[in-house]
Amino acid sequence: MGLIVQKFGGSSVADAESIKRVAARIAATKRSGQQVVVVVSAMGDTTDELIDLANQVSPMPNGRELDMLLTAGERISMALLAMAISNLGLEARSFTGSQAGIITTSTHGRARVIDVTPSRIQEALAEGAIAIVAGFQGVAQDTKDITTLGRGGSDTTAVALAAALDADVCEIYTDVDGVFSADPRIVPAARKLKSVTYEEMLELAASGAKVLHLRCVEYARRFNLPIHVRSSFSNLEGTWVVKDQPEGGSMEQAIISGIAHDKSEAKITIVGVPDRAGVAARIFQAIADNDINIDMIVQNVSAAATGLTDISFTLPRAEGSRATGIVQKLQGEIGFQSIQYDDQIGKLSLIGAGMRSHPGVTATFFAAMADAGVNIEMISTSEIRISIVCRESDVERAVKAAHTAFDLDADQVEAVVYGGSGR
Ligand code: ADP
Ligand code: ASP
Ligand code: MG
Image 1 (cartoon, rainbow, N blue to C red):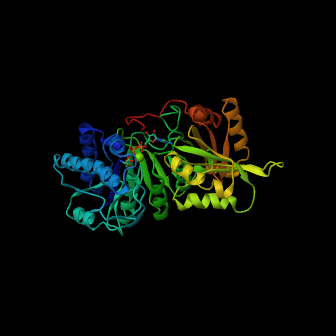
Image 2 (cartoon, helix red, strand yellow):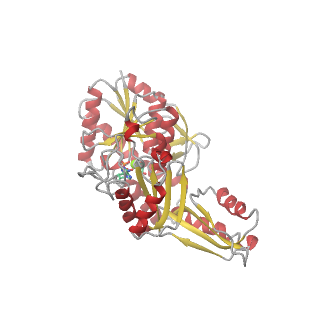
Image 3 (cartoon, protein in one colour):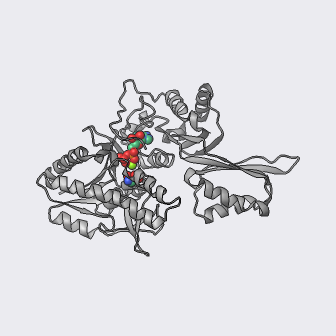
């Protein structure tokens, strides 16, 4: 008997009707003779609403308590889903992340899964039940406190369980038909990808394509577990995330597989930094010591007359004020002139393994940006990715222009967005 893990995102379980629809789908899989483990997200925009609520009672909610609050969202949907399934005549048992054996680090808000001990899930399956697991949560190995895995983390719960249970596949059900060449909410002409490699999907997820959580792709690659991203609103075949493109696919391999965008970053510029050894190390060490991840960095050539340079870097907007404060404290020691903070930036990334063997991608990309009147502020590249920073207000135009410039536009519209608020 096969074992399948199915994960349903928030928009797929937004209300009672949707929960019943999803329950019917799960019941059909179970009745086809498979063992089924389901991972479920909080209903609709519940997580955002709980965060808003927390911010109303405290400007800086305590991490432990915030995790306690947010995990309640998934507990609601898991119990409702189990009830809806049992109403269809099948046995379903819901489990919190902790009960399902999701063991994590103790960093609240972005804990990492370090072990999965799913004995209670295995018991439930052995007794013929469907196991429903609350996504995006676990329990810290050392503190025993409840943790969350970061926004979008239910995908990671699903893949971690699928790997631990040696499932055949992990199905990620969402509100679009698969992984597209760009966000279907922005580019209606986006194309659905039949398959995408872990390598490309990692770059897409890291560059802001939130259709899959970054850690879930890392996890799937480590265990070579296939992920099938598909819609819970249609029966269409979705996108397979796999190790290699299927045989024969490589001939037609597009140069660019996808375009991702990200409006969640900010840019800090440190103006008039003395250009001497050790200064950049001092600044970035202070930021790292505070557990803040930075993304792109640009340092200019110092002006000959002054020996001063500017250093710019991008980071999550949510960390903006904390990072500015940390850098500000170094002003006396380093002697830079000022700090500029800019949270009106957007990032756009082109991703494709085909880039390796095709020169001229950057030239085509930049020409498209110029034609669209988009000013490029920062650039960074990897072997299979080119990213730029521009004005946030230019991002959507830039994505559409790049999509067209690389001949990615579909002849007929296939990018349907079935639900969700895109929040
Ligand atoms: P869920 O609630 O099911 O986890 P998410 O909102 O996290 O859903 O992810 C699905 C959304 O990801 C889509 O509605 C779409 O707007 C967005 N998205 C961004 N980039 C892409 C892409 N390249 N392909 C498909 N969806 C994308
Ligand atoms: N409910 C959580 C969120 O909104 C986790 C998830 O949906 O994956 O981020
Ligand atoms: Mg998601």
